[in-house]
Length: 347
Ligand code: AHM
Ligand code: MG
Image (tube, rainbow, N blue to C red; front, side, top):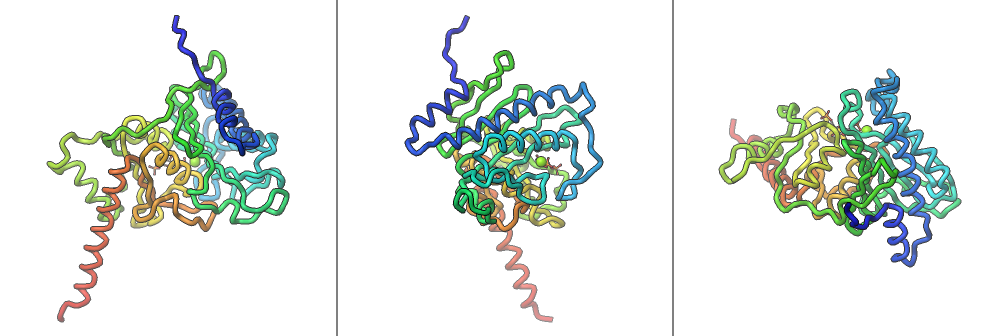
């Protein structure tokens, strides 16, 4: 029998609180609230095939996408738990058009994607809950202002996700490295399983919906051509994409890889949302030694203008993200030169 000591999430939170003299316990309460909700969501996700909770509600969310029952169930659990916890003044969710006020005295704003990758629900694929936490800018008790939830990603005090996969895992950062906890269902506790995660040095995987190829901008096309055909790439990359950001990001974080959801000619801002998909994943990536950009600007430095704003997203190993960055710049310059020269052509 192994006697190796284990660290539970609760012990980890208490230790962190002790080492932070300014900690009031408010932030820890939010993590506890999220975990309570996610345990309940996890229970429903794992038994989803057994009861009539699968399938779409035949309604659409504010982005015009089909909403599945489990998304709504997950959001309700998160809102209820954060409201009871009392530390969250407002929550922004993928499923709600407007920010929802929970407790005017709360000091934090939480932004969530309650169930990301929801097209995987019906096929028993991995899905996840993504969260991003900010301190509000306005004073506790005052009316919430847009600046409270439209803060740039750099201001996040914590970010993370819960992955409902073959095991259930919580991965989060408070700006001091990335730690992962795995739920031990026999005792109902999250146990520290991956302390201080760092991206492997080499990028081995690329994850993109390549079916969009003809709609991609030239820089991204050239990057893809390069990694697949250039002799400079000694070991071929593996293509891995399940269409669930949490699952694709998680694999790339542990194995070394890059996730791409670029803008396309018909949707230049891409598909993913800055505040509850791009920012939290960007903070995790940076804390694990990687990075995230929209192709031009670091995701964490983008000033948000709307709750459901979309962004192109390139996310993963730092060197690889920089390489894409360079491809985009070079091909932008080339197309600019071509346009300028065409204008100067003699009739
Ligand atoms: P969702 O939040 O509605 O589930 O959409 C986000 C998901 C990501 O998890 C995933 O990476 C992407 O959308 C997949 O999109 P596509 O099917 O266009 O490849
Ligand atoms: Mg979603």
